[in-house]
Structure formats: structure tokens, C-alpha cells
Image (cartoon, rainbow, N blue to C red; front, top):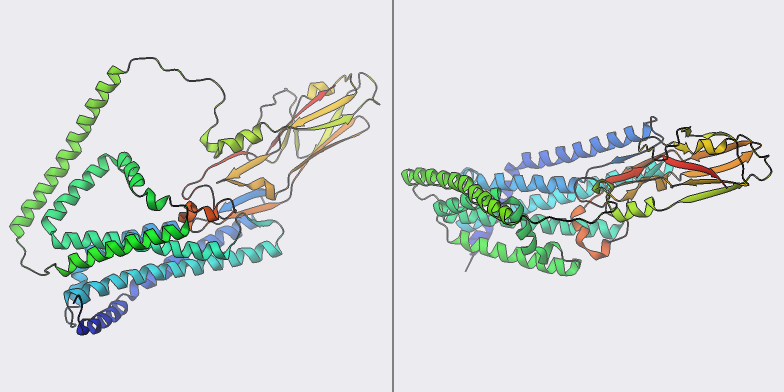
Length: 459
């Protein structure tokens, strides 16, 4: 049998001891998440009370991504210290199996606790923001809330955490089983990965595409749980046949360490030289001219280029009858939040100011025509795929009083709060196009202008 009756009792006792001795990591988890919660709420309140900009936004970091990276680092460090940690528990009855499985369950418990606390933290944040948006008209939540998305994301997050931990535990078991050979192999692989990082990332994505690009959450769960169980089973078997605390051959270990360093140095130096040499030959063989089609290009700073093109090509027009005015009249321009540009420069932009820039001013002097034509592109400003200005309801209006043209650019005082969570679940079709996720899991993109360019002509 893989485990006997007494080992279950040992496992239960060891697990209790691990939790008792591991209070400090849990305290730090609560402190870190509490710090995230406090800092985000302070930032949100500061954004809401900011009066310098009538329309602005505040982005709350997705702590689920941050903590997933933090858990990865913590699990790696914990597995490096596996032997020293177990030495402190050597006074308790144990076997190889009970000791390792208690360690395995302890780590999985940490992953679950972190996920639960993260879910609670997000719920508190969203609850506070929802109350703010209810009692303050200027506060708007950019993303919608969905119980289904929240709990499905929580479940997927735990699955990803378990998969990452199972891989770390497997590597740790392999190193403890075949320490010298495994360390040498891992150092070699790690060195090759570093110097070919871009290519490695490309192939890893292709290998894992069956999982990380699976659009069905049900199929993903089946695949991920199956893979997790397989990795865990292999890890348990390797650990079962591992003999611990055997005498160490320090001379051999020192020689292997020196050999690993030499291997790493050789790979790091030689491989780039070979790669650069092959690139040089390839570039010398390709001497033909290249041709690129002309036309407009749109910067990636605008996020989705099609979104930018749609706004760029959209022109609004206001036509005002001025047939009652005598020929040769000068039309005065007045209004709210406008800047009159009398140099006829319609390409003047400002992304920070909510101002209407008026061009074509000379056309309002010595007017001869029956219709005043006012053309403008509606303002738009996106952050991570979210249109900030739709919450501000910007309006351009124009009317005549006598020979004075009034142009008003009006908007509502607005603070937009962007608070994403569970960004890793964006692969599932069920959550697509439901305003639950930002355009990017990490980083940010944006584009557009909060100002308006208005051109005046007479027909």
C-alpha cells in the first residue's frame, strides 16, 4: 500500500504542526492584502476628491496577478527550504510519505487561503465603490459586477495556483531524488532559456495552448484538473522512492557545482556567437529591396486600431441658417469651454484639456452665404478598452443670437474607477463582450483626446 493506517495519523499531526509553526506567513498574507486594500481605497478617495480635472479616471491594480506571481516566488523559496523545514519536525513520528504529503497539503492550503482572502478583499473594495457610486453622481464603475464571473474566476484562479504549485513540487522532488544530475540539467536548461527567452516563450505558449487558450471553462477545468492530478501522482511516486538524509559527498558536490558553472558560462558565451554568425550570413544573403504599402498607420498607443479609425472617420455636423444676416457681416464667437484658434490650424489637439478648439475663424468674417456649417469629431478617450468619456456625456451645441455664434462644449463632472479582477480568465468565451474585463491583463493602453476640434465654414 502507498500509505498505511499509522501514516494517516502522522500526516494529520504533521499538518497541524505545520499550520501552528506557519502562522507568520499567514499573518504576512493578511498584512499584504490589507495594504493593497488600504492603498487602493486611499487612491480612489483621492481621485474622487480631485477637483483639478473635471473628468478623470483611476485604475486599481489587479491584485490577483500580483499575488499569483508572489505565490510562485513563495512556493519556490519554500521548496528550496524543504529539508531545513522538515529537520525542525524530525522529533515527530513520521515517514517519507506522511512528511511530504503534509507539506503538499500545507502549500495547497496556502493557495486556497490566499484566493479566499483575495475574493473577500475584492468584495469589500467593490462594495465600498458601489456605495460611493450610488451616493455620488460623479463616481462611475467602469466594469460591471457579476456573481457568476466572480466565483468562476475564483475557481479558475485556484486551479492555476494548484497547477503552478504542482510543477514546483515536481521539480523539487526531482532535484531531491537525482540531486546532482537534476541540478546540472536544470542549470543547463535555465541558461538556454535565458539566452533564447523569446523563442522559449513562443514554444511554451504553443505547447500549453490546449489549456491557456481553451475557450470553454468546462473543458478547461477537466483538462487542468487532469493535468494537475497527473503531475501530483508523478511527484508522489518520485518522492516515495527517494531516500533522504543519506551521506553527502561534498567533494563530488563541489565538482558538480563547478561543472555546472562552466556549462552555464560556455552556453551563455558560445550560443550568442553562433546565433549572431548565422544571422550575419542570413542578412548578407538577403540583399533585395523591400517595399511597404503607403497609407495611414495608427499607433498601438491607441489600443484597438479599429476603434481609433472608427472615431477618426466619424464627423458630426451642425448647420445653422444665417440667411437673415446681411452680406459682409462679421460673426462673433462665444461659448463655454472653447478656445478660438485664429490661425486656421484644425489639427491642434489636447488630450488633457476638456476644451473645444475653434478653427476656421476667418470664415466668420465678412460672411457671404446662407448656412453656417460647424463640423467636429466627437471626443473619445479609451483606457484599456474602456471609453472614459461615455460616462461624462460630452455634448457640443451651437446656436445664433443676432450676429453672435454660441458654441458650448459641456460635460458632466466624472470620476471613472477601473477595478479589474481575475484577469487570467479572459480566455473563456462566456465572459467575452460583457464589460467584465479590461483589454489587457497586465499593463495599459489608451488613446484619443478629451478635447474637440471644431471647424467653421459658410455655404
